[in-house]
Length: 68
Image (cartoon, rainbow, N blue to C red; front, side):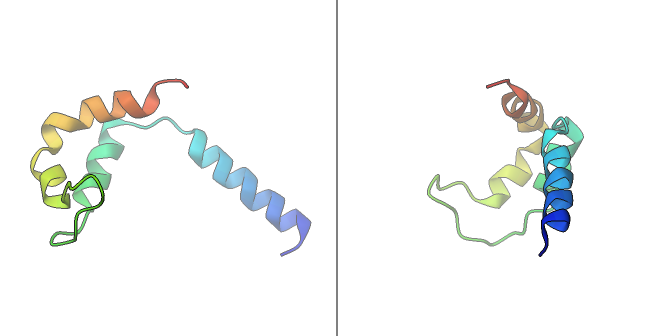
């Protein structure tokens, strides 16, 4: 990949990363999770996220938008 294409793709990704995280985006992402997958190190399965999405979407959006 040449320098120009690399720079253009990097700018696109950076702009996408800088977009604010919305409650709707959190909910959409959680609903897209697949069922019957192995839990990670936190031992939380996708089904737990999906069944609690209405309670956790707002706190997660606040957590992910806190300035660091």
